[in-house]
Amino acid sequence: MDCRLQISDLESRLKTLESTKTELADCQTQSERLRASLDATESKLASTERRATEAESLIRVKDSIIEKQRNFSKELEGQVKILSEETEALKSKCGNLEMNLKEALDRAEECDNLRELLAAKTKLLDDLSKSSDGIGESGLAAANEFFKAQEAKMTEQINELKHTRSELENSLASLASEKELLEEKNLQKETELNELKEKCSSLEAKARKGGHGERSKNDATNARLIGPSLPPWIMEEKKTDPSDLEKLANADPATLRSRVLELESQVHELNQLLTYREDVILRIHEEISKKASRLEAAEVERSSLSAQVSILKRELACLRDDAPRRRGGYPPEIEIEIERLRGKRDREYQRRKRAETEMDELDQENNELKAKIKSLEEQLANIPPPKPPAPQGDPTDKSRIAELQAALSQLRMDNEAKRSELFDLRSRFDEKSAQVDKLAAEVKTKERAVAELSTELSSKISQLEYANKELESVRCRVVRGGSETERWQTDINSVRTTNRFLSAQANELRLKLAGSEKRVENLQKQLMSKLQDSEYAANSEQGDMSFTLAILTAVIGILSAFLPF
Image 1 (cartoon, rainbow, N blue to C red):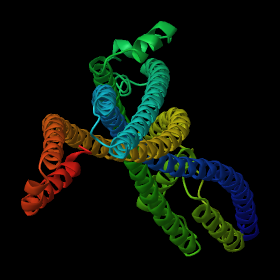
Image 2 (cartoon, rainbow, N blue to C red):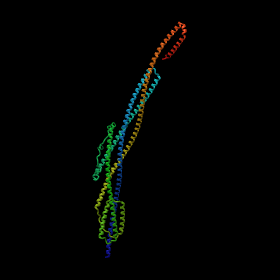
Image 3 (cartoon, rainbow, N blue to C red):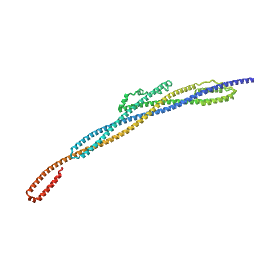
Image 4 (cartoon, rainbow, N blue to C red):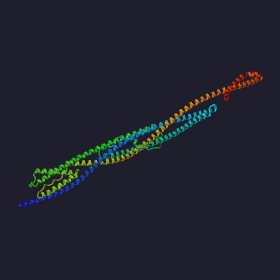
């Protein structure tokens, strides 16, 4: 009987060994499955982490793009203001140049009038020189030479003024050409703005299409890209006509200013649209942060589950270590607890199978399980282990895992949408950066042109001031020459009167001399007759006659002194 009992015990032990071997094989297969599932979940986690990092980097890029767009819009507004100020300054300069030209033309007319007056006065002086007989020819020649020199100087100054007038006309023509160039550049900027508007409309259409596609996926993203509609001037397809260009070229400054104000209002509308897009992107960023917080909560739950699994493994190891001591079997309370713990283990196994776990921890756990299995094989070679319970699943864990998978799929879709939006934003940023470089180059060229124009204007203004000074000096000289000619005319008239008076006196003296000569001849005749009549009387009166002859000779000498006149 003892042998039979021993044989039955041995057979039961053999059966228990076979059952333990089958359990070990099942455990190995389950561990391999767990390892494969852990590999898959680890790869998924790595991909999700990589996508999360990409999303963060894309969000940063998006923020930088938004800041650059704001800076670009501010720079555009500043450049539009600068262009308007430059156009106003150029218009004011053109008005000043026109006023200066009018003044120069008036002064040229005054110079022509002065020239005519000088010619008339020279004719008068020539007539006076011809008519005046008493004035010397040397004085008249000197006066003629002086007035001719003054006339030559005046002609030179008039020629210089004409030259400056031609230069000013050329500068006005150049300013008009520069005005046309500025208008063409304004038209180019309008075309660029229209292109940007078309791009914005295309981006708006793409965003709306993306919003309609996401409506069928999730209700939370239905109103993501819904907002104020685009203004009608963006949706309209405008084509530049040559008539419009000619109108702008011949337009008044008021119309150009109104056009600039319209462009500024359009830029303001675009800035409003950009702020709305920024708000939409901020909403998307908040949704991504919420989903990231959900993922973090899921990771916390996963870590708590892994801790519970490790605790259960420790309890199982303790129970298996205590199994050799209980050769007579487990009590019912312990078996119930063991079954409950095994059910928990199976549920945790199912949870770990569907949830995302880390690879390193699971590898360590698998290695620990293998070591424990080897120790159990050695320890439980002759001990009948309990029967393995059927695996059971927890519906709550399944629902959680399903929710996590749905959240992951939604995050993938959102990441793809954000990636497409960020690619569009990058392309727009590249285009706008190129436009900013072009505008900076144009601004530099305009600044150089403005500096050159300012230098030319300063030089022309200095020339005009010098010409004005010369004109004033010439005018003063002309006034002085007129006063001198009047003084000379008065001198000539006085000389004429003196000549007439002297000629009258000379004629009177000539008549007196003729009468005195006749008297002297009569006296001589009387004396000769008296001398012939009486010599005695002549001898006695010789002294008296000599005295009278001396007196007569003195009178004749005095009269002979007046004969040249």
